[in-house]
Length: 259
Image (cartoon, rainbow, N blue to C red; front, top):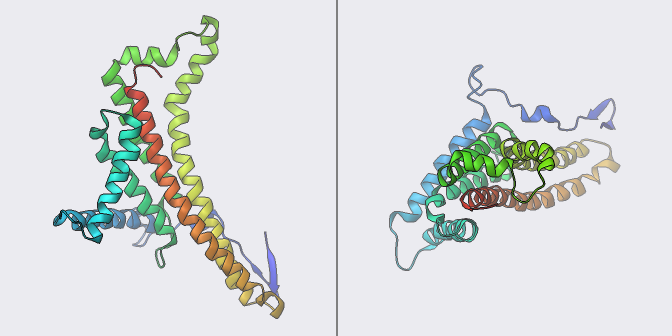
């Protein structure tokens, strides 16, 4: 896509190259902006919840109330209501997962930071691996490795000839498709949302440099970009919720006698 605005200068739209950020220090690939943002998120999350719980009161102040509200939401809505009576031992993981993803997603609309680390697919992949290591570990510990594999490969109540087709599908679903879809859903939403924001904000800025008629269109591009920012915030929260919810559902399935 290329829109000529003035003279020979054209609008160069954002692309995947805008997500390939160079190292901050020398040529070290571990000093890129996304990695620094991930470390920053850990510091901010830790500082916030330490401050919120440091002087716990019966009548909580605003900071304590905010911290307790987030924890209660994850404990009750994403752990207890999904996993059931054994939920408490999984609350620390789900709570960490939710707050970590949410904070890193919101970085995409924070001035000066303005980059969601989850738009780099390696981070969602790692989170999905954590979830599926826990999921399979819990299932094997609860059922035993052979009964667990038998349950996956040979679904009860299915005619035996169907297993020729069903067994490979089930194995692929549990060991490949689920972790891929869990990670790619988060990555794709953060990638697409950030790309759209870049298109409208940079496009509006470029329209300002064009001829008079195009300058009149620039406020509409900026307004649409601002509107998308609020929409992106909703998507960022929703994706943190969905990733954590699916993780809880997979753990609940691992604890179930039949699924």
